[in-house]
Length: 529
Image 1 (spheres, rainbow, N blue to C red):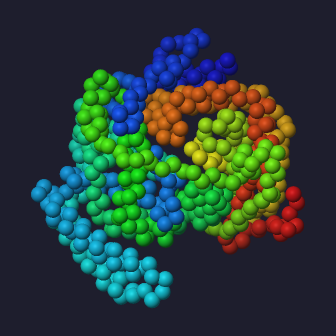
Image 2 (cartoon, one colour):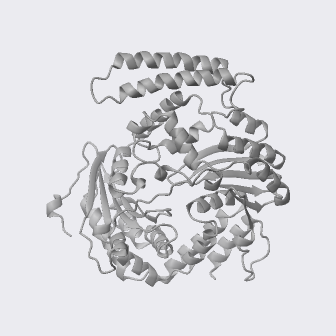
Image 3 (spheres, rainbow, N blue to C red):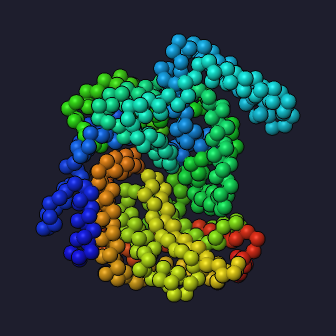
């Protein structure tokens, strides 16, 4: 073991609270630290003891994200995340006003149903009628806010209990709600989250829909947003990774409350969730409380799973025949934006559980390393690029490997044309297929991977690591994946490069600077192969 690796592991062990000296002693297994329980209704509970402070990091993670949506309701997972802070039958509302609040919502929903009917007309839409209906809705919303709603009561409840880090996030495959609380507030947490799971009330739905559409507009203001969105949509032609988490504007601006209610019933349920509790936990005391509050929740049916797979060359060989010769299809997206010009190469790769993923992950780390050949040549020596990167995704379904380079600009012009940078990237790809990585380089990368792995398990930070992996696959894969990465050989890295880094498995994105900067590219039909 090198001196650098010893120091990196020593630091990570300190973060984990393991103070024994490094004398070849084996690092404790993750499987020995995690306590798993599963309720009869399917809710999985993962607990890790970290008693250094009387706090508990709490995450309730749902196995739902943008990949579970469909055209017409894209962005609904992110929208739902917002609505879960609007209250329940007992939270977010003034005492004694539930019936009045229900009536306000009934009237608002009826008026918005008329708006939706009018907006759905392909032609002959009565805009004056729509404006009149929306004015009535606004008046009702103002009354509801004044007379019945207690804004952000859920946030306030957690804060009053000493909660910190209160928030939520939505991704392609997971939605999670998290907070760190004193251990004496754990019963309050379980009661509130169980209530949110089964009794949410989507108050202020239509005003919050406006907030979501404004978020989308703010994203659109980011330079290169539209290009990246179209590049992603081209890469994932069939898979529901096709759209961004924020969704298409035409969907999020028209989604209905009933569609969200139907969506919630499908996915926000105990058998589709993992509860992670890390800190000063006592499973013997906590599990009866979990059972008390979550146990009575009865799911109906099962949450649907994603079935559409991206039709890649590997997919055809797997489903038709190993000897099948897939049709040659190479796709390119060319755009302009007021941002750094860049070249992006995207390759289809398998999901998180596949045996090829460890080698692809390590290959990405080697290719993008600052001590690696691609960075040293393009950025340091030739100064053709401002930056280079390579990485493999950890996706539940269809994965992708991305290689990109940002063009260096000198006095408003590119140092070299983008098509030259593209050709240079392909030389490093071809090199990865036939040249074994230097053993010392690979050893340095493994040192970094090992330290980062240990740091991801340190303190209460392990809660997020457990939640994301269990939702995507199973939490035990955290350790299995790490061991597989550390065992990767140069030969395995060459093999996956040969298997996946082909032009008919690639989508190329060329982003030029808007307003000039020198494209310097040959026409597509003149491009060298």
